[in-house]
Image (cartoon, rainbow, N blue to C red; front, side, top):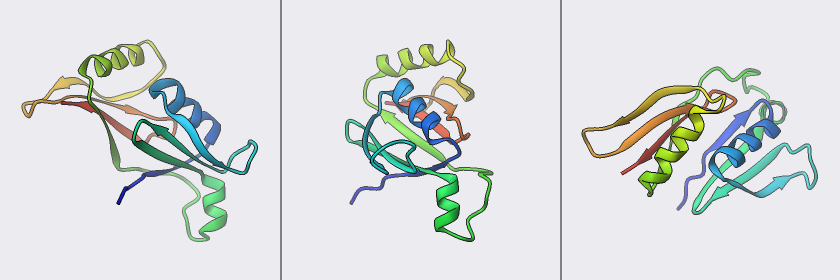
Length: 127
């Protein structure tokens, strides 16, 4: 069994751009066949995430809230410490908001946290 998180997003094009340009995710699958998309699946190696347009979600689920107010934290776990540190330095030069600065934990990981365009918390971790 695989669990693939699906983020509900306000601007799917902006979110695709964020995940492709900052992490290297590739577009796997999408609906409809041509933009503007209402749903996409992105992959990076064995990791997959899905993005769905907020307005489409509201149309599908009548009682879904019409705003995105909070989100849990998702962990993007990497194997390469140098890559994670380089990614951190790259993020520092971009307009990316951090909710947690780079730190080495007492349980042996290196971590930091960033927010995506919809304020989904992404904990970047290695170790």
